[in-house]
Image (cartoon, rainbow, N blue to C red; front, top):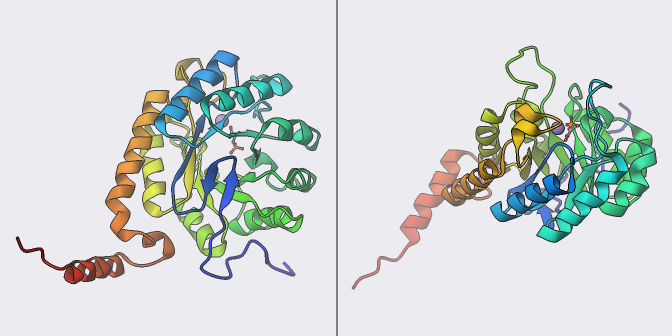
Length: 300
Ligand code: PEP
Ligand code: MN
């Protein structure tokens, strides 16, 4: 590699904030995105949106164009799905993110979405990256299942080099050898991305784990580790999901996870700017002891 990713690289302690509608990534909060793998009907996406909004999620996800491994599986509603997710988002006050699967979809997707997802399979599709970048919309860039961190950062660099500074990186599990999880959630890699780059980094526990029992603990792990958010597959009736049913959680599970994330963040508040910024637990504890020492005892 002749030159490194100079725009994506972290050159200072400053982190980039990415805005998508009123959702913000990289401001020190934990942005939770929820919604189904695929948009199936107006009622389904509306119910999902209602649940995500009520739980405090900041963004609605849902694919109209679905990249499926088998050509015989449901491929998404296509163009017909886009107004459905846009209307559901608007009705419940949520900006929306949906995938552009091909360069030819970009203008159409951009007419409805607040953020364009570039999926794992397309991470190095340069014409697609550049077309998406040129819409000016923020880009959710998912790591390919066998992409290195450098490759992901170079993919982000294409978007940045085209004049679009709004990229959120997403770790969604990489290819492993064990069948008990769909992919391997590379939390360490996600944390390393935050060291290497100023861009926000979120976790997709759904595609990483492939099973609903692991969504909650993986999301909490991401929040505790100081990532910038998570994107979770939420379906009003998971057993009926046309796509990725085994990893879909229902809206009450999502609400519980959102509440757990809030409690966890409150418990970790004394370590603010701590673990994610690379400080040790011991340093954070030292600060707390000092703060306690500085407190003036109240006499009454
Ligand atoms: C998705 O988000 O539904 C999806 C297909 O993700 P990935 O590109 O990470 O497989
Ligand atoms: Mn999916």
